[in-house]
Image (cartoon, rainbow, N blue to C red; front, side, top):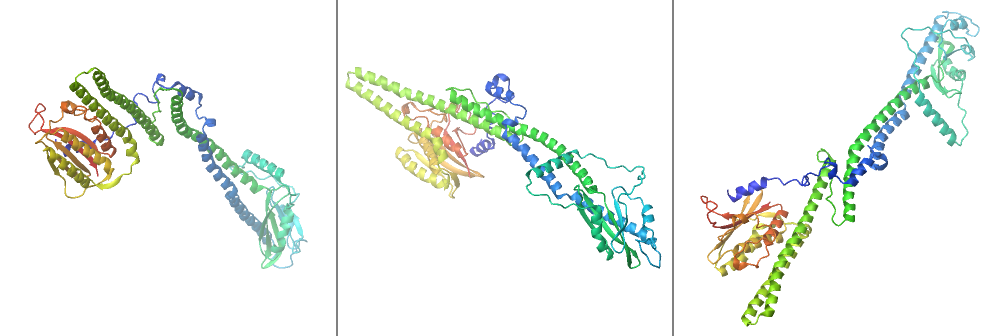
Length: 577
């Protein structure tokens, strides 16, 4: 497999999801795996817990506000009342004109006409022959505007029953109750004397007679003493072009108000039903939002409180809600991944501290042994050898502490430093020129094969330069006089490959997966203690922080097998463009 092919295979691999790192600790696990405090809190909580959930209360209030505004707007604009009033006005005008036509058809074609003296027409007889509905009042006026006859106080015949015609007797309990509350509140907080605005049906009709005597039909409305709305219409009685009298008709008091109350009652009934449904749905919605969020917050708070109380707390378990296809599922997955990453970092730091202690103990043990032996040594040559050992171990400790310090600061520095666009080929050119001069002095052939065109990438130039310096110096450390080191780079679609090859002894096959671990070093005997084993681990960390990959492999011919000694070692760095 070629280098480019292997790089493409690695690039296609998707990063592992951090959400499922904490295996076996989902929210539906047996009770034994759930923190007792959190489980007890969930048992105490009701289905909704409105008293403990501001979010649930907000959901219900906001859903009801829109509905209340809609109903209040409909009741305030009162469109059905206006429509009913227009219909009643039109109908009352038609009725008055029809009654006037009844009088007109009885008028003689010639001769004097006086409604007051029944000259030419019998107004009382005509009125007695009409069936006027209860509540509706009819008035007849002469040319002087004086009332001649009316239905006020007259006995009304029982209305004829029409089969199939039903009377609207729907109750208006809610509307009447709200009207009573409103009137009571108005009376309680009103500090002004009530205005006398009521008028009787007869007075309202008489106000229209003067205009009707001029030959015009007039309409008006007002409130009676009980606060009910009455409508009145006056229309002339004509013989030809002459006006001989006026017919005035008034509607039953509160007739429209009753119909309006019925319509409002229906709207309010629908409002209460819709409000009940809205509250139920809001509670259901709140339970699917507020309760999971409460569980997530409680789990985080429980972990915080545990960490505050104990030096070695149990692992924090975030509820596994990743099966939900919404933002709460994403939040649960993000929190679980964050907690898992945090524990990984803690475990990594603990392992790093253990490795540091182990690595420091070796030169310290050697130093202690050399110092103890030095006190007993009598010969000068033995003392010189022991001093060389002490010097070697001190330099080893100094190098080890410096590398450990750099490695421990690397994470924070990679986050703080600002990435910039730079020319990778130019950076490699400067590095290879420096090592080319050094290799010439050691008798090592140094070969570079860089493309002539610039390759721009975004990253931390100094950190990536540290990677290539480490790889090249590492390759030269395994080469002897007559060996060769080759550095080459190629651009491949949306990535760039930088390869460092050497003709040294190669890498033991069993060590190919270990060389990037911290403090692991596979060196010849003569180089023991000269390297801390952190160089490749730091290089891997820097490359991965840039979204790239790095790996090592042995160089072999196409027809060779694993038992054949390698021709050298190859390190490949792949970086995204």
